[in-house]
Length: 99
Image 1 (spheres, rainbow, N blue to C red):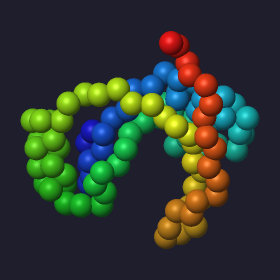
Image 2 (tube, helix red, strand yellow; image 1 turned 45 degrees about the vertical axis):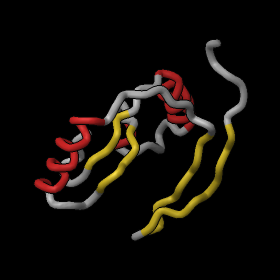
Image 3 (cartoon, one colour; image 1 turned 180 degrees about the vertical axis):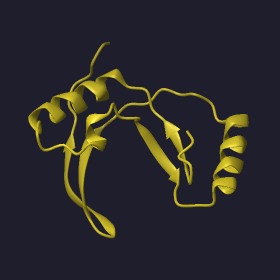
């Protein structure tokens, strides 16, 4: 996934989108403009680099990175207290959707 000045692994998860929508509904009126758009779920692996370096890594990864299944084990909350993100809590997920 191209982040412009970085690279990420895209994630597809209808379940996570549903959880995110549920949480966002409870924060109605408090979300920023950015939070009102559908999220692009991803794992950042490179950030704040020259766009040419990001493009090179993306090209290299696309040549040999397989698609694979995964499972979320929980959720974590971080607060941005510039210039860092600080952990505010973790919650484990229980049960198994589907079968």
